[in-house]
Image (tube, rainbow, N blue to C red):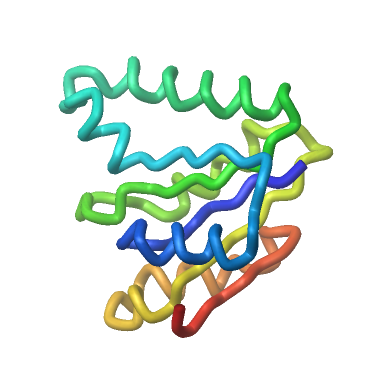
Length: 130
């Protein structure tokens, strides 16, 4: 099974990637979409984390590939915290990264964090233009 952290600010590019590559049997955990859908504010952060964890765990039991899209609109985002997801996952799950480089060209901190930790992932895919 595979777990992907998707570095993408606009979901439209990721949707195009899914369509072109005909990816099936997937679950997309889109944090910005979930925050909007459930109108989650800071007070409910623990509940939200449990909800996301439960969704990921349920998907892994069903053997689905998971695409996790963090909330990059949040200025307090810490990439190293996102990488801690690997510790939560089981050992037989491939931990991968998918980066839409064009969207992060101006944000050197995020690109440097990802490129500096490429050995942390089982596989990586950096897409320049999509």
